[in-house]
Image 1 (cartoon, helix red, strand yellow):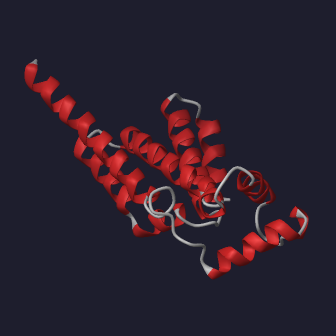
Image 2 (cartoon, rainbow, N blue to C red):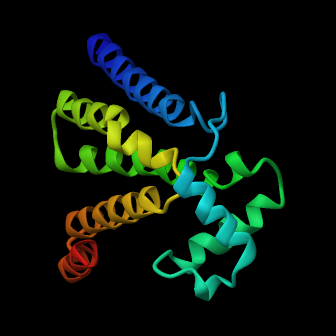
Amino acid sequence: MPNDRAARTLYVGAIAALLVTGTVARTWGVLINPLDLWADEAWWATLLETRHLDDLGFRPVGYMWICRQLVELGSPEVMLRLPSLIAGVGALVFVWRSGALLYRSRMAVLFVLLLAAFHPKLIVFAKEFKPYSVEVIIAAGLSYWALVCLRRGRVSLGFLSGALVAI
């Protein structure tokens, strides 16, 4: 039916537009027109260069190790924020796919993605040299995995994933 095809095309186009604009919102200030590091970010960047990874307190060691490696590749302002940016964009995909599993209504899925794409905190998290955006993608990914497991009848794996999200 031509009407269903047109609706599907419009839906896919809206999803793509939200993913692209959400990505641009997160990229602006990191890759496009990079912002200077904030005072606390500059302090952590200094600590990253001068201390051992296990002396950095509450910062996740893996996150800091990745950032240390990336600084060697280019501009510190961009490279220190790159893991958060990638995680912020990836979280959008998990939120979209989770919405598609949770709701039958295409409008509901679009609304969920719209909220995630333009949520001010999620945008800021993706622009910071802080692991908040990594935490968001972990929670979004585990939530998506729980929904997939429950959909496939693997209830115990779904509940395990849900418990990991709660932790």
